Image 1 (cartoon, rainbow, N blue to C red):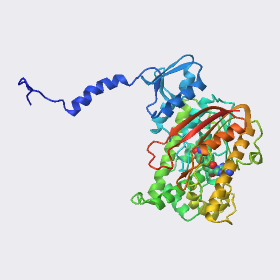
Image 2: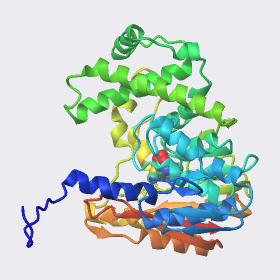
Image 3: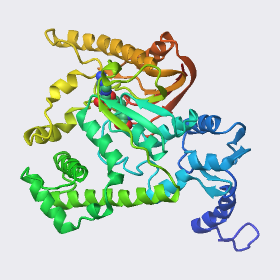
Image 4: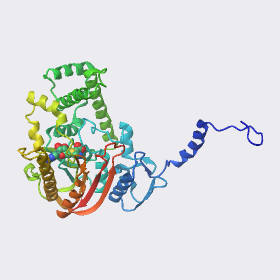
Length: 435
Ligand SMILES: C[S@@+](CC[C@H](N)C(=O)[O-])C[C@H]1O[C@@H](n2cnc3c(N)ncnc32)[C@H](O)[C@@H]1O
């Protein structure tokens, strides 16, 4: 093509344009100093970074234009703890090491052991532990511990914790996360032909494995495999056995990587205490008043979310082999807001459930405040429930209950759920208080 003066002119190709701007981008993304993590995506992440820094160090400033943080003082401690920086003093943080090792920004160590509804993401727990500047010697509680995200993350940070939940399957998962790392390497070294035999035994409900921890792991992986086949035909080509083997090998890989991580960073993994119990009566699980330095938790907030139903394969199986004895309906009835007699019509029933839910939520805040030390900190992740397309003011109510129970509000962060296509789920708030 010729320009106005008859000179030959050539437009840059797309590759050339990208290469040209790319040169600039290489310098634009900082490689030195205290650099933001690439996983930071929202304004909430900047707020979380700020909260973490406020707990971990006295003086700092955040430079959002250059994706950097200015720090003074002993930065090695910050490097070992922070969950929102990639580099500190130009060296990879423990967190970026961890996610590089597992090639995932959240599913590291045994966090991805088994799918559980309404699960925390581990980075949030780590951030809150940092915000409260908790260390070895402190004690953390999660009275809605679910599948143990809080307790496992505390363990990985060498901090003691207690997890309470009403859901027996959740407690099995939390306990396994606690125990797996202590299994002997030789026991974990199971090859494919043994796994095929194990799978056959599981199918016949006659699992013959000596190690109790490994046995529980096999059960869970088996339920997860069966459940995957009920929900989708995606795995048909792999077959049940193939998927089971794949899942076991994934956990085996997590086991070696977690060992390496703990060794490389010299971390003393602290086993958590996992107990079955009801948050509405923490005394009955022997929790003493004023005994916890911090509570990090998330109550159930979706009426629509069936936390128990998904596990029917597990309940049927474990009841049948006599591993435990639970009626799923009884477990459901212990849930927040579910203890309502069903001798009323459907509309009245749901109204009663909403009222009972808020009464229970208030009672649970009251119970939590009792066991928290004076000066202790509490973080609650909660979102607004949706019922028949209507929003319930769950977040506002939770805040009111906290204030009514004498807690001092420190900060709230709204954490949007990126990519949500459903009006019911936009995100959740992290409400933070001190006693
Ligand atoms: C939003 S989930 C918490 C998930 C958890 N943060 C995790 O990462 O797995 C809410 C949990 O509250 C538990 N729950 C509901 N009612 C309870 C009650 N009355 N007492 C104790 N736990 C209860 C459920 O079993 C569920 O595990």
